[in-house]
Length: 303
Image 1: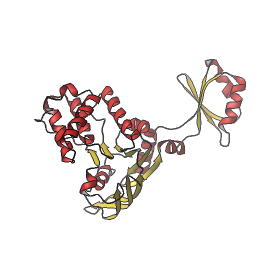
Image 2 (image 1 turned 30 degrees about the vertical axis):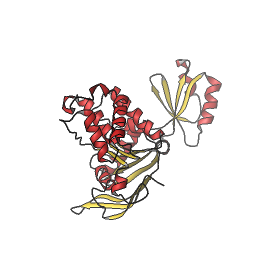
Image 3 (image 1 turned 120 degrees about the horizontal axis):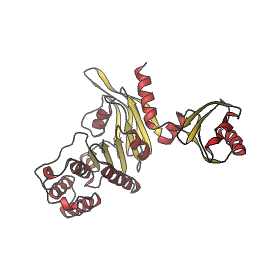
Image 4 (image 1 turned 180 degrees about the horizontal axis):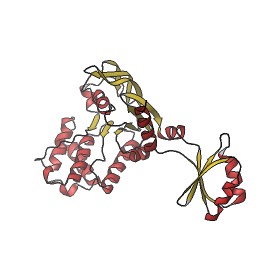
């Protein structure tokens, strides 16, 4: 059973197509990235998933079927626009939010205390939310989306406003949930985080699907057929220039990027190099998700 399925989904507002015939699925137990520039349709897609708005056409299945009051309790959602009960004490608020999702009070209290400890907020449990720093409030907002132990967690820009240490802590919790078999949908503009965290991604632009698949597969597909070489002796650069079938060489700090001619394999280049010099590092270069994102969005803008 998929955690989420979109099949031919479209949505318009005032005759403007915001989502156009989008199909994709999210597997159980994966971190799935939902990516795209501002105005691409990500927020609309999330609202469709949460049944806040209805599609004009197509079918959406969440946890195996249409979203019901019971299955909604199995979802966790962190919206981009944050909102907390500012006058309420931290522990009390988390217990209350868990109870809204039908978690018994005793279990809710145990969950809340454990989560507060894991994000180093336990000593602040008796404070009102408004007394916490902005960064702490962001972590509390994250906790409010997972306090009831959801099976499917939708996180919209979860790292916004977090310092590097807090970002690391939240990332660890996301990975922990994935390892427990839960499913996480991560909507973010931070391509570096998406590249490190996500198993698969969907990138949309102007309401249409433009990239869909594993992060590794997409990077490989968009590879520019170059090789990164690091020599034990930096004076060995001249050895590359002597190898036939090399069309371009770009020097980086401490390494060299080699562009073989069409039809020249990485293996044959490596064989030639190892005959001529000591190699410390040799790997195929793939573009970052950020580079692919920019290339895809700018390419569409130029159409």
